[in-house]
Image (cartoon, rainbow, N blue to C red; front, side, top):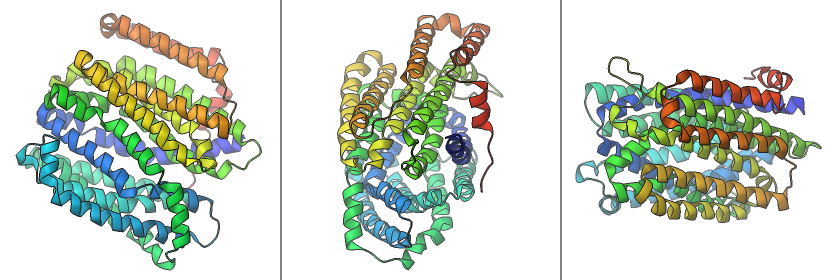
Length: 485
């Protein structure tokens, strides 16, 4: 088991380097956005990127998950055939969707209240969508081949190009939010061109109708599941805009982005977790390994949650040459950050729990659980946003992730039961609840007493060791690794 856990740690760190470094560098654009963009304009930017995130699901329609599953378990020379059979329908669908997007761009602008001057942005949206979707399968191929270094270099280079162009176009050419879309399009084109040799490997395979049926049977349920998942993640944006306006949406989005630290942790784990559980599913002690992974994942996530929650406001308000992490006009939304962090942690819970369904090819269950989360998110947003504003929107997201985690856990119990270490997990959840109560009950006091927050954060970590949820030996084993290129 130790070797398996060490391997997962290695892969998590390697993918994490590209995910953390890349997205953190991209996160550094937030001060520029919140200082140079009006809250309303930033709201428009948020709305369009929510649309991109949702449409990306349609552009792949589950073929990414199907490719991961079939290419990850096929040890024969059929990998090129799997790539060609997966890629061909993706390309055809993408071209059709981009044409439809451009034809109906005016109607979309009216539906989403996009100001007339921003209608040309739909062309950038179409380009970003098609380039990113065509790059998705080669990126998965790199993960399956464990070419983590190449994966990381491409990802980070993409982000650096994006950042540099953003800074040039915003600071020097004063192009407003159009700068963001131009930069993204150029960065996506770079990744596509670099991955083109991997993409062209489909030439060595052939399109298989029978295989396509299997891919579609496995992957298609991920379309409604993906729609529900992404719908759940972005539906709060249009609801906040409808009920509170683009200015409030801009404040909400800027502070929601401060949850990036937990999102990065969960994302880097997910990149390594999917190939890991597929590779080790047939091991005799696989379920014991998966249970231990969940305990470690929760412990590290709990520490991230507490530390970031207590100190994010202090960090966000530090001003250097009149620049802070987010502009002053956005500070009113800082109180939602702990809620967003916890929501992302619960997102990691359902990623852990869904492994058994993936292994047993029970993807048909995914859309039903995702739909529960999406419906709950919509209902909770309409119920809470009018009274509690952006705090209500953050709570709605938290509720939806909680329901999804519970749903995946219950489903996995019947299909692939794992004896998780609930005695340890329960202790951590109670600690999180207690710290959450202290944070919001004594918010004003804690905001002005840095040392008290520091003591509480250190105490939280010490409790993890005192209760032997974490031990020095287990921590040493997790960080002792050899980076494989």
